[in-house]
Length: 218
Ligand code: BMP
View 1 (tube, helix red, strand yellow):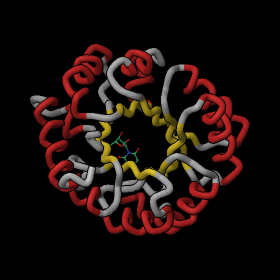
View 2 (view 1 turned 120 degrees about the vertical axis):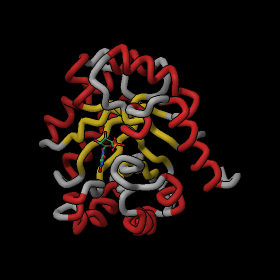
View 3 (view 1 turned 30 degrees about the vertical axis):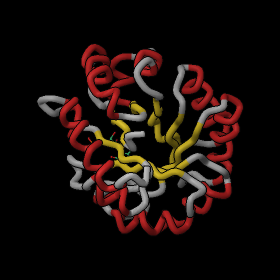
View 4 (view 1 turned 90 degrees about the vertical axis):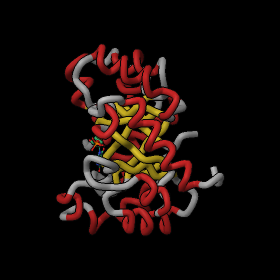
């Protein structure tokens, strides 16, 4: 377990496959979203799944019926998990979880986003979203590595019952060891790896930082 997820936001298929191959030993999953999928097509999910489980970051945020239709497509495409928004409410989340459980797959719920604007409207409702995700039996939450103190608060709410995956390390200013110390299970890293001169070395460095922080607790 490396406790690291790669955010594969490149827009070229060959580049994505090359990076996936180079860094696979240092990541536990690959997160793909609109940039790569819109650029290359949905097949990229199965292609990348050869290297690591794929988390489809579609930030699903619609009425229950539409959420259900979206999640079916995501899991049919070979994703192992989907990321959904929480602010659309319990019924919308339940729809995603229902489809995910039919496929034996996982749902992550965004509680509060990592960019500065994420503190504007989302932070005040983040605790409520975390409680909802817990009650709805989601698999995990997405919480900001840019604000480790928020990860700590969210961790108190969900205790050890949900997983926290945390973006905002590197390019957005967060530090992997800080957010792991605050209670995140996995850090999500994009640009600091895929834009590095050597993605493999960049991934290795962050993986080592995480292992040092965990100090054998792993
Ligand atoms: P980067 O390490 O390059 O900043 O990438 C972070 C990734 O995590 C991006 O794919 C981004 O869309 C995603 N993300 C985020 O940065 N903050 C959030 O709150 C939720 C996200 O999904």
